[in-house]
Image (tube, rainbow, N blue to C red; front, side, top):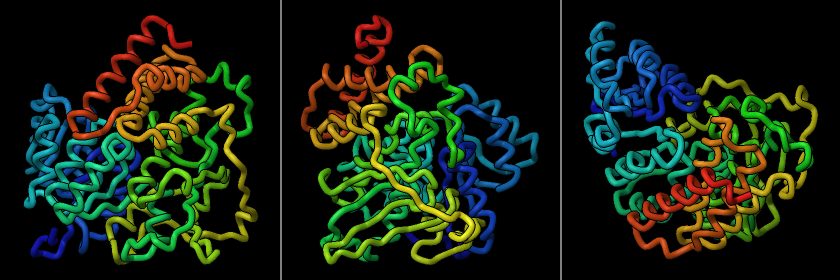
Length: 398
């Protein structure tokens, strides 16, 4: 996908009001001669979206809720902007595929809701900065097939996968790779026993010690499900089987991942815990561009610690690995059940320790099948959500 005739890379930021979206816009604003935010999309927060439109002057603004279209249009008009308002997921998909609207998509919509627009961008041959791990977990093989068929480029934006991307050969040849090791901060409850997690509240769970993230991904980090989803993501992105993917807890969050090669060499990418670094890699690729993040002063930080994850206290990581090994629809079932569980926890309807219990219940109730098509995966996603919702209502999964 070529850049515009003025030399600007036109960037659609999906999930613009979230932490990834605002970080992407910060990097874009640092390079006005190179980058332009041409499409901004948000879920329901019209005021925040319009505020971003005032700052970045995109051609298009999309609100996911169709009932808010008139509100968005009126607010854009009142702000004196020429930005065209849109609403609904179909509009998002159309803009993702539109060559005139963008050549690059920052896919940062949380959860399975981000799948369709990401697929639309890949099928149109766009550069996709993938920050939505759930879409890759749900339909990784189909997404990669779409990217290959259309000549699209995927640059992972998760700090771990972006680190691996930076450590691997530029031609993508992984034949010399022996093992990939993802690092995990351990979340806010690192070192606690299972018994000490019994009364965890949503407020405690979203208070991540290192990263500024939205509530869903913060809870996933607290349960280590986030790292489990990243194992599945790494399998798809880099073609690594489960037995060559490992996790180490690294509380300083300065080493973002390791790649071990067959000659005994290990490469790692280090940096401060700031998503603007990964976003700058994706927005400037293959060039390096300024991100606004300072360099790493190892003398100041002093030490780097590593430990094995505690899968007794945090069983979500083991559940995700089992889903990866099972393959087929198992990752889609895992992801859907987890989304229902995390939502219920954030609403105060589910205990923290019941999150993995509910996920395990759904995986046991719905054995994995071949993931033959997107329809099969969507059906698995829907069935998992149904079983999880029913179990929440009846309380039968404890």
